[in-house]
Image (cartoon, rainbow, N blue to C red; front, side, top):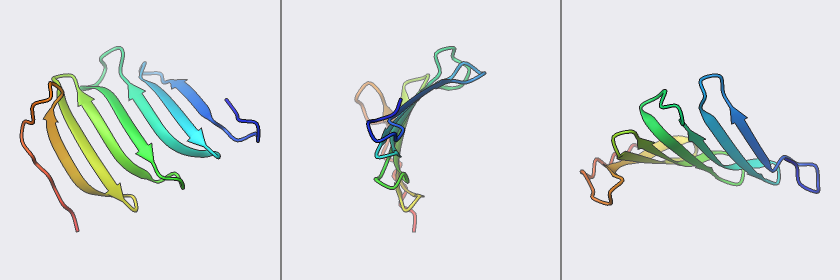
Length: 100
């Protein structure tokens, strides 16, 4: 889909492996993406990504089939923090990783 200015605002793709991705844009720049695995091809159910105004990834959250959730944050495109926990709201462990 495109907005009134002719910039892309939304895209939806089903890949050959049956995974699906929805991408949202603002002013032609990617702001969020959600990838799902409805056929259980991979070990994850869903991956959510957010992007800054220039389209650089700032966060990613992956929900795995076993309920594990992995969250990562980025600065200038580099992974700076990662947290693991369970989707049931109970923190498995704070395996935070601060990278230089």
